[in-house]
Image (cartoon, rainbow, N blue to C red):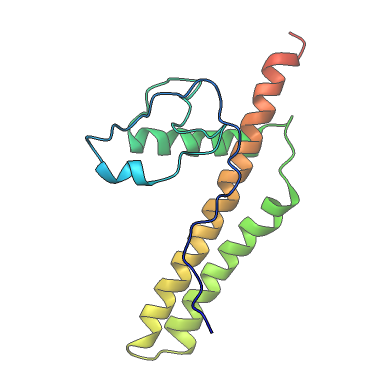
Length: 152
């Protein structure tokens, strides 16, 4: 039996575009970049610039603006809150109260109860936050629509 030969097989090459863009990272910076294949045609190499170039505010100011927007959303007669928020938000509040009674009053295990209570509290708060932020995004879209198309 003879050993297989290790000759490279010439694969057909795809048609190269006439104009090659300049590489974003030069070979002097990363010498191994030349070993990588070029990216496919149409690849976005750098993310696009954001359309609204507003400066990001301070975290507490953004948080306060979100709370004000949530209050405005709940009391806006033109906006109907989705069923998910109508059910999930009160349910999370009830589960937080039950979580307290479950681990602090009914099943008090010295080391496990406080840890499990805090973990469930964190999970419930993250769930409530996610539900509320999705609803606030929906409310912002409705406000934008009303600002553009509502009769004055």
